[in-house]
Image (cartoon, rainbow, N blue to C red; front, side, top):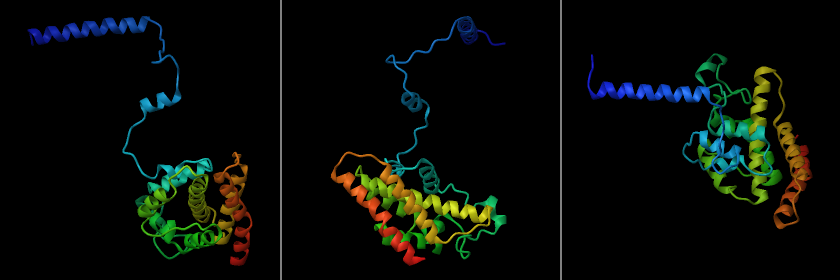
Length: 232
């Protein structure tokens, strides 16, 4: 049996803990916020895990963003989408359902696949949407620097990237789960139409930035449909 200062210290601590517990149990709860005001941002900042800063966060932000598109882009950037190269999907064969030629990976889907590359080609001719088509992580870093700004047109291009990634992933899921197929020109047309509607729905004060954004919307509406019709 332990005796001496160590034992007395533990007994003392146990008694103090019991007294404190009784006071808490018998008392009433009250929430006090430092500074006197409640803020959901402050609560979030207190509880969230702080990881390393990433350079691609700007690709998910901006007035033109559509949340579900940004979410899928975020998953794609992290390579967390359930592509067929994942071990638990190996029983499906692993071949890309969009082109039927190569292993389905994030690297392949965005945008090495002939199908997704055709979507990019159409949009490049429509709104000068350029994509270097190197390694996926390298291209994301490139886009983060190229479209990293508050200019509204840069925000529109960030949203356009998210829309392309979202609809390519959606088309992939349609083919896997519904055995339904659409040509790449249809996907490009959907992206063009949705971005046009998003742009014209944004109310901005007259400025060089806003006029540039509306010109982009007009380009999506007019030149985009002409190019898509010629491509069909």
